[in-house]
Length: 284
Image (cartoon, rainbow, N blue to C red; front, side, top):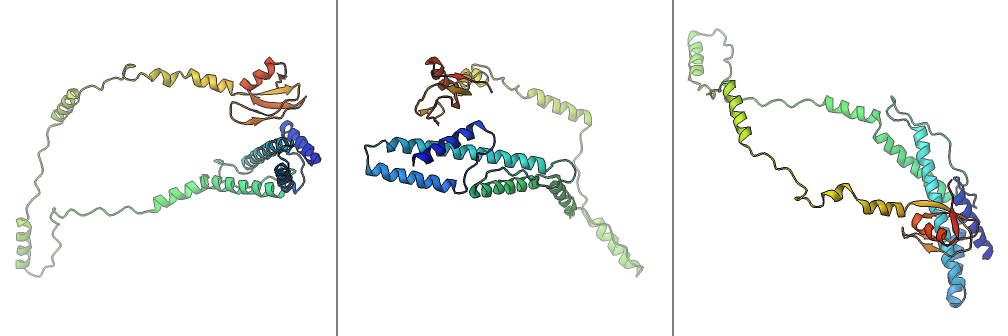
C-alpha cells in the first residue's frame, strides 16, 4: 500500500514538471480505484488510525494527476488538428499528422481520438467548401412569381377577322372598364420641405448624464476586479519545508508539499510561504 502511494507521488511530480505525459501502466486507473477502496475499508475498521489522512491525500494526488493528463491530451488534440486541417486556404483537406501523445492508457487513447473526431467535424462545418455549397443552393432557388394586378385591365387579345360585329363588342367592353385613379404627386420641392419640417419638429434625444447612471464610472473602472485578478494570479514556488495540503483562494486544494517541490499556486497564498520563509518564487 505504501509502495503505491510513493508511486503516485512520483507520477504527480513528473506531471507537474514535464510538458509530456508521465509513463504509467495500462491498468493505472484501475489500480487507483483498488488502492482507494482498500484505504476506505481500513479506515472503517480502525477509525483511530492515520489511514484517514492517507486516504484524503491519495484522493487529492490522484485527482491532480488525472486533471493534468486531461489538459495535456486536449492540448495535443487541438494542436494536431491545427497542423492537419487548414481553413480558408482554398479547398480544405484533412491530412492527420501522426503526433499522438506517448504513454496513453487505453481510456486516454479513446478520449484523444474522440476529441480529434469532434474537432474535425467542427472544422468541416465552418470550411469554405461547405459554405460555398450553401451559397450555390441559395442562388439556385427560383424567385417567386409576382402576383398579377387584377385591377389593371388586360390588353385586348388579338381577334381573328371573323366579323365586324365581334370587333366592335370587344372595343365596347374595354371602354367600359374603370380606369385606375392615381393620386396626384406633389412636386419634389414640397416633399423635401415637408420632410425637413417633420424632422425639425421631432424633439432631440436627451443625452444620458452621469447623474442618470450613477454606476457609469464602475462600468469603466473596476479596481476591485483588478485587485482580485492580481491576488489569484498563479506563480511558481520552490518549497523549503514539509507542509500539509492547503485550500487556495480559488477553492482548489494544493499540496501536500515536500522540500524541493516546484508548485504552482495563487499569489496571495504564495505570499504566506514567502513571509514565513517556507519557500521562494521561481521564474521559469
